[in-house]
Length: 315
Image (cartoon, rainbow, N blue to C red; front, side, top):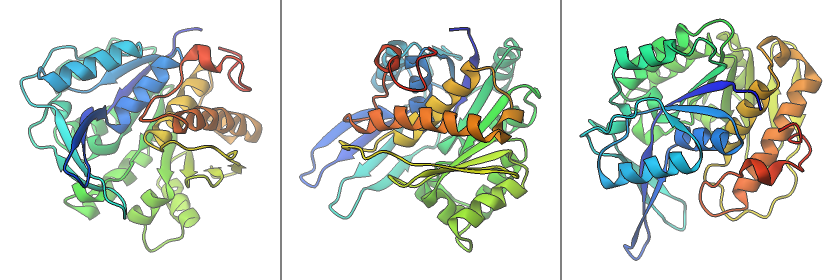
């Protein structure tokens, strides 16, 4: 497969899963980390842009990146601690508490990062998502990198909203709107749209994002069809019934699959308005997400596992 470098900007973290009996299980994660691992496992050229700690959790993150063939753009180990998400597992659903301040993931040097990305003029795509949109200095640097991305670079924004981590709702919405003005694709769930535009229906919320300048909005809604909208077309792709083990990383795997497929076919912003091409890309991405849902934890499939799947034989 021809190399198509993809930069994935955002956090790596450890989820501390706290059960009702007070037992704790540590699992590495973070939406952007999962996206990068999906791309790398599928054979894509993923470059992860995130600070990684020198602590024990940071070592686990590095091992996971290496196992998934992901390049760490900023390899220097940082003294700051690994970012943590405390996840209370309750019958009524998980509750999240984040430890974000002065943690490694967001402590990236602007000059070093900009120089490293500038050294890749053939960068096919840049992804920016989740907590990276919230925490400085990554939030402002990520916005600047997105807004200055070369015209041929596909930009994907994934808010993956975490309301409990948002301090200023209006400023957060404003940043998503600004990023959308340069985005080729904005991926949102129905829950994201309920948070970003509570006054609007899901589809009207997606159209609001289009109005800010995004070329395409991809909307997921659990097992319901995935809908992709542009100014000119709307595509709905059904999700086949899936025996779900858990849904951790499902949306991230979909984005990683979409980016790998789109860049692997040398496609541009222009083809987002081609209905058959967009449908094929969404269909292929759903296949990656479904496999991830059939496994415990965010474990996207590897290239050799999908070669016989419709939409992935080109690999």
